[in-house]
Image (cartoon, rainbow, N blue to C red):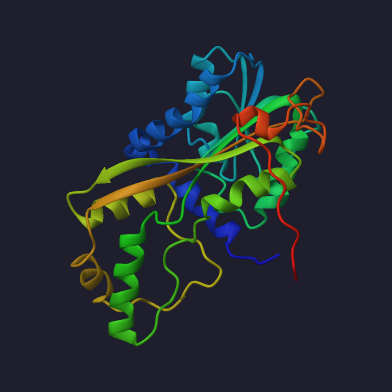
Length: 286
């Protein structure tokens, strides 16, 4: 497993961010509401939910939907406590819950700093009861691209090389496969977006710090950045941004769920369904 993220550093940054996360609560709430709209598509009623990394925003929304028991987990004890209910300081890579503890798990913009995402998904699926639902959002490839390119261009000009300063984000095409590998039934991955506009580049930087989202990369450059780096990057950085949100949906397997048909089990010919005559393909001469 590649170790991309410095998890102790990420925990310390989230601890510091807990004191100022209210500054970015409107963005976090808008993203959470986009995710929780998926609950409107099911008649299933949930009694015990786990929310991961909700930063004090997700748990009240779940309780507002009538879910009586909501547990909040975060790397940071201070951030977990912001949820106002049962709080657990813990690691998404080592979930401290018994198998079948919850019938709903929600992770809103919180799994993109995990080193072993496939392993974390397996643990989440095990924490779900049969026919339990998993909902998650992650920032997608393209998020913060303007900042990434501005910093890379400025550093290349000043130092003749580039070091990673913005976290990598996943691609949509990978997520449904990850859900399936983790044992989820009916896996779905789709995309949404939140448009953002900042008056200044420093407004974006302040929001990233307030959310605990400054990069915590193992491969980060530990040298002091050149004094001219950020002014040069900010002079070309676009202020119209988009938070590209990837949505993951999966169910813990249960016999009542719709199953894929067995190969060869169809009782209607495709030609009949399409209303066209069936023709035999010519033999391959080669």
